[in-house]
Length: 160
Length: 127
Image 1 (spheres, each protein chain N blue to C red):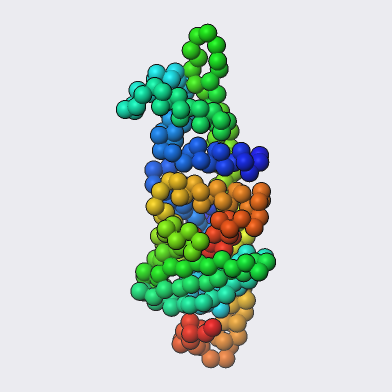
Image 2: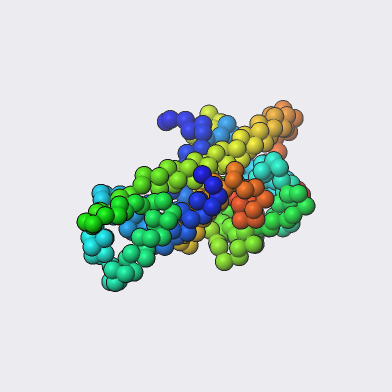
């Protein structure tokens, strides 16, 4: 199987979905833990310029989460529900509280490649093409205008 | 490309009718009448959409005594690619931080294995 060392991305032309794939030098159990243990999650969700503060974290099926990213004294809050949490996949919702109507449904799959390697596949479904394009576009604008609240949704958006 | 140009492109493409016009033009140039065919709207409304696409630099419509076909500026694809690539790079940076966290976990887990294998996933309750 080809190793995917760099993140690959695909924007589905027919559905408002973003898919990504990336391989990690870790077992599925470790990758799962890095996504469900709040202390570990806060270390990588980033970005490095931001401090992540986990406000609430209940990584179980039916549980929920909320974290706050602080950048230059401004706080950006994100929250969602853990719809399903199990060793091979996580299904959750993701919302930036500054845009509470925008809810993404995210699915993460941890696929054991053997030899201590795991493939992470993620899929993020938003409610419209407009929403997806704005989502992608805000990533583009980061370089143009930092400190723009909407972009921080991208900056702190981890589990997509 | 300035933020202003970008936001014009984004808002032009936010409309489903305009997106479908862009999709039609991706197949080849078309006259305004041909573009209007699939829609239940007046030519005037079609021209309105075209003007938005034109202002965003996504299509060009050479003026002249004779009607010329509307042409898609390939810039639209560059913009889309740029969005996606930028987003991908952000994700890659995030995943490199995750690589580092996983590497640290590997070390800790190895030490644990050396002493006592800990089946209790007590980590989940930390923090």
